Image (cartoon, rainbow, N blue to C red; front, top):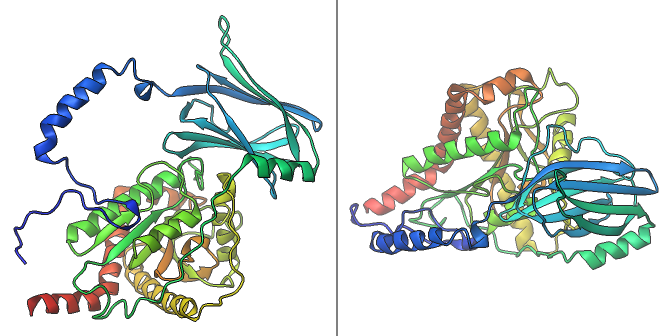
Length: 434
């Protein structure tokens, strides 16, 4: 193999994700003039139009009739749907910019108990209302701006029955059911037969995103921002080594469902999946401090792990996503074997990671724990969830935003990954030398 051979700048891989690369030099001139043409017509092209702004929101009414009002600077077309158990109303909008005060949506009124908002996907924003019970959408209308009054989107809700709400859910939503493929276990991931000659592929999973902020620190730090920044730092260090291919489940502030995160690891045939978080805990705020490594188990190892898994598994509910039913038993012997092998490698990496972290950062007592985290349920990809620290603890929050701590944490995790793949990398190096 020639070391100086040119590398393709864009390389497609499984799952429709491509390696980042520069624009081909041969097309640079064409791109430049195309860009000028597009920008010249930007004012006439709606694609380049500024996103609508939501500048106010309020809830009024009682337990029989409730009105939800959005103030906007321009008219938008909503799509309204429902989800039951728990009862939720979903308002999907074209991508908008929310200019709302802090704490908006934390309290409700009438049949709306709380509500939240944010970017759901590129080009799509979402508002999710938690309801006290079943409702019917009595009417929806838009009031244009008049004088100094902004434009208003009005949604009127009335009390309904569970059966009527279920019918509304069925008529308003068309969930896409995804069935996980049953594949044979990968043979000896760390040995000679594991993708011989290929670099290990690592998927880093920054938790939450978009409409799902995750935890909020005592000083206002958002979990979704902290973990994305750290994932980018770790990705940079791993790629700099030249030993691995690294992918992220999300590269910006957008929402990715738990099932999709698992699918990304499966589709890319990842060799390691690391979900990155910085949660809050409701109990023992002063005691829960330090990094923690979690692996999957049917029964939580302790109360804190059970609580965190419960919170993390609510991510899809928070964002208004239809939950897929999980199989209750395993009928495929190959799938069962894959799960056993995967859990064995997950536990091995977790122990390796804890060993490296001990000398670099503060760890919680009993730093290797386990619980039923949905994001760790890929049957063919060794997976761990890393809590960088707990945003409910002011000391952890201060560390999480310092560059020095982040460097120590990323270096320790890189060393653990090197240790995990050392047998495979050594065999591959020997094969290449021969």
